Length: 143
Image (cartoon, rainbow, N blue to C red; front, side, top):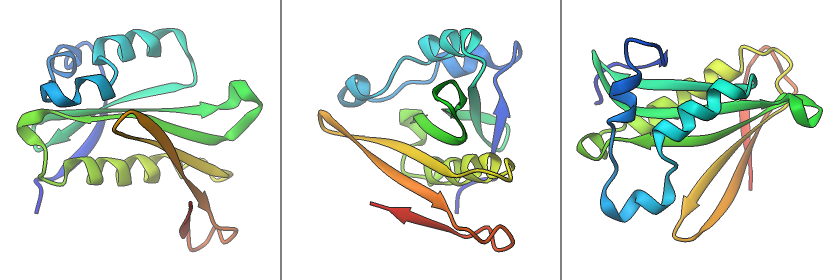
């Protein structure tokens, strides 16, 4: 069971911890540099960078965006997710992904959440659509 996982804003108090996170050498080609992602977030108003916390420790980084600039204000893309190499395999990534989806669902009109998953050299998209039933908030995965 992972420690309590939370998503928090990246702020002046924690940005250096986010930048200092590392993946293994084998994973470096599959993840954007966190410093680059944070810089990108300062120039794109639709991007939301999030620090992943386990307890009081920053263990990862996640970033998503609204596709409003593409004319799809209720579609979202989770396109950055990394967990520090010292904290992988503890369930933090999965927990953070679930929290991000819950956070995005605060948009009561959310239509689609796309998650970019990189495997080897290619990248495939797994789309998750919110069902028509807003009361249940249930989600289905389209492959």
